[in-house]
Length: 412
Image 1 (cartoon, rainbow, N blue to C red):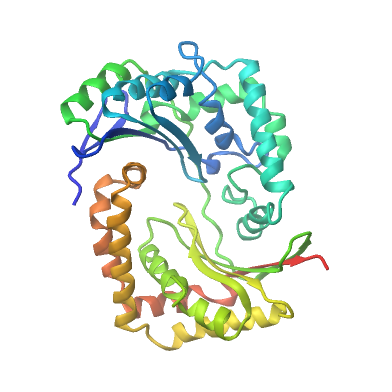
Image 2: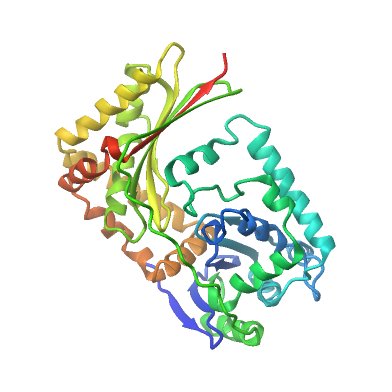
């Protein structure tokens, strides 16, 4: 049970504090409620670009990394469709450096053409390396387009097209920053060996003067209900043919989220799972296979994936997954199997909570979802999933008209 304290500044910054007196460090995790879903289809990749621009310096601090490295710390960031997350880890006696640096870049960046050119080049090279010059690099471009079309989930975080970042202007970048990066659109988690009183002192000292801003109103359309099965076949220069089947599910606020997460573990958690035992080991349909959920906030996808063994066709793969789904449709998952997964989850949660950096980012995420204290209810939420709930979810979700399949063929 994590004892958390929360407070909000006058400028709208939400703060979550968790003290761990045994930790040698302090972590500042700053989550901004902005992701690739806040972009338009003709200007994508901006949220990811800002992940880099935020390290490009400010008028007061030309180099963000240098003071952290000198103080014996580390920092990094990541972006998703739903959010952008930054963290700084420092020895407890140097914690104030993190408050200074994070508040400084929240207040404003340098916004020079030179800084934009440097970071834009870095992002463009990353796009080329990840999406154009390696096997399966464009996979999520295909999947997102197939499943979501023009919806804001219809492109990967790195962007839909390289030209969108290449053509980004300084005015567009400034507008994106002041429309999304602000204390009233952020969550600050302070975790580690730091008291609540010291946290409040430093938060007020460094963040009180940052003005709140007018955040661009978010308008996310509802994903239309899929009425017809979708299929896409592509042929690329990759080593192995892959099979990807996706089903639309609810988002993180949907009650079925927990059921879908448990079901993905029922199917594919570990080498004793059904997917591995039946489709990899026994039938030798796939060299490797998995089932997992996307976990997106607005609406989700349930994935069934595998890399095909030599001589296996699309029909073989399709039939194998369909037979596996039929098992869950027709037979209740045993209480023993669910209890085994609950035990694994509880063990994993304990292990994850010992990594303070992971805990800090989780707390920020659950605060974004409504309340950081949800982290204390996770075990209960998973324990409430019953065999009948798993069966009902399977019957309602795994329908042909709700199915989208990508057959990613290796060139002969």
